[in-house]
Amino acid sequence: MEKQPRLLASQLLLKNSLFEVSLNRVLLTWKEIATKKKRVSGGIHHPFKVGTSHGVSVSEILAVRELDVDSETKDDGRWQKMPQKSTEAYPYAFTVSYVERAWQHRWRCSDVTFHCLEGALCQQWVQTIREQLTALTSRPKHLLVYINPYGGKQQGERIYEQKVAPLFTLASISTHVIVTEHANHARDHLRTEAELKKYDGVVCVGGDGMFSEMVHGLVSRTQRDNGVDQNSPEEKLVPCTLRIGIIPAGSTDCICYATVGINDPVTSALHIIVGDAQPMDVCSVHHNNTFLRYSVSLLGYGFYGDVLADSERKRWMGPARYDFSGFKTFLTHHYYEGTVSFLPATDILGTPRDKTRCRAGCFICQHNGQLYSEDHQPLFLLPEYKGGWRVIRGKFLAINAASMSCACPRSPKGLSPAAHLADGTTDLILVRKCSRFNFLRHLLRHTSKYDQFDMNFVEVHRVRRFRFTPRYCQSDSELDLRENGKRLFSQICRDHPACSCSPAYSSWNCDGEILPHAAIEVGLVRIKGKILDENLLQSAQTGVKVHLPFGQ
Ligand SMILES: CCCCCCCCCCCCC/C=C/[C@@H](O)[C@H](COP(=O)(O)O)NC(=O)CCCCCCCCCCCCCCC
Ligand SMILES: Nc1ncnc2c1ncn2[C@@H]1O[C@H](COP(=O)(O)OP(=O)(O)O)[C@@H](O)[C@H]1O
Ligand SMILES: [Ca+2]
Image (cartoon, rainbow, N blue to C red; front, side):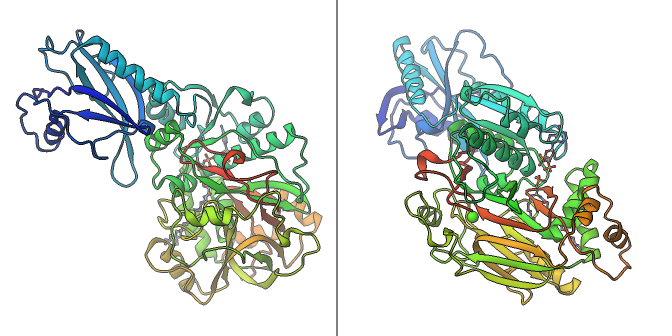
């Protein structure tokens, strides 16, 4: 083992909560060693100006612990800086674990050990750092964790146990872990039995479907606890105080990807620990005034709906099921007739084609999000307001509503690259009937730098609300056939691509779950009282705060 340098903790500078550790030159030499494997001569004790590259801000310190210098440093499987054998000069030491940014938005937990001359100094360091950490109110202390063992590559439990739990333990976060046993287990548990008062956050270990299910459970529980009826679209929802974190363990994980910039469990866990916050829009989906589900990522009819319907029967394939079903759906190339009516968002900044990218602290989100609060009753919400609605009839290959960019590994820029996470709007993308070749060009542009909207059969609108009615209204009997999955005619046609007739309807893909109805009304959801800050349903991870800006 290389002769390891010794880091001397000389003095503690606490300046406006930026915890600056004035380290001696040895750290710099240490960094050089780490990069250039240079041997270090005895460290010259020389506190140097701490630039951000060497300062560690309190908000990114995960933990601090005294090191028992005499005994061998217990090897907890993590690479530690081993102090020199001859520690008679520095009998005291402590280790700081902090967030280190790596490439492509990755975060890693790094340790650095400091040696002190006297015990009192060491104590003072550890004590002060601990006090600073305790003072950070935005950090979760008790988390309720739901693991979906079934989603993605069915690795949810392993991912949590191996990559996330050790970090939560390091950060002294207590957790109650529930491994779900069936679909909607998390939603029902959240809606009924979960004692939410005991926690300051819930964590979803799964994909977008699981996250959407937990949003559903949490929002339903809050409305029930506050006596609000979810079914009436006009009702204002009460926001929840809890936060939802996401550990990516699903197939698409676009919610995690679009908020963190990468699907990496360790990065997500670290974001949860430091209590980051980023707002997010939520759509409520109704059918004939009956509440169906919330959507936070994609509401897709036609192509994405059919891909999902076909892939549900191939879950054993894991994430690859989407590519297989995608290919099959592409070949069947079904279009669907219907009427889309929508309310364009007019008084906002930004358009779906303005090349902006929504990032943490996004100005457009803050500006547009401010527009909706209790006292400011937007004109178009009044029942008598008829202005502004636009109606488009036609034959569509796909109707997609993206409340966020839906960026994911398959499509790094996403379905709607300039969509904002918390601007109170959703981007309605209409892809009209066109040739397979043109549709393929459109799909391919999702993975290249070309503009997927710049095609004459594609149009995109930034909307507040929208409705879809299939041309052939679903009779109840037809609905029953659909519901118990018989779908006689469309199924026969669907299974025989040679058949020219197109089935009357597709299914709605709501965050990866199939909706039972084709005719739906969708709107961004409203909360009671002031918005922003205190009244947001937040997510502990990268602030996936479920931002409920205004009424449906
Ligand atoms: C030819 C290559 C074309 C690549 C086209 C890439 C478009 C991908 C857009 C991705 C949109 C993702 C929206 C996310 C929705 C999720 O909420 C939702 C649930 O996520 P979960 O599984 O984590 O619970 N995910 C989904 O609904 C999955 C949608 C994935 C669609 C993949 C489509 C693949 C298309 C392949 C077409 C191949 C045609 C090739 C013809 C020669
Ligand atoms: N234990 C379970 N058994 C079966 N289905 C489950 C279980 N837990 C959750 N589910 C369902 O699996 C669906 C997909 O989960 P998700 O984590 O999104 O995986 P994927 O990303 O592969 O779709 C969720 O909507 C949820 O209702
Ligand atoms: Ca949005």
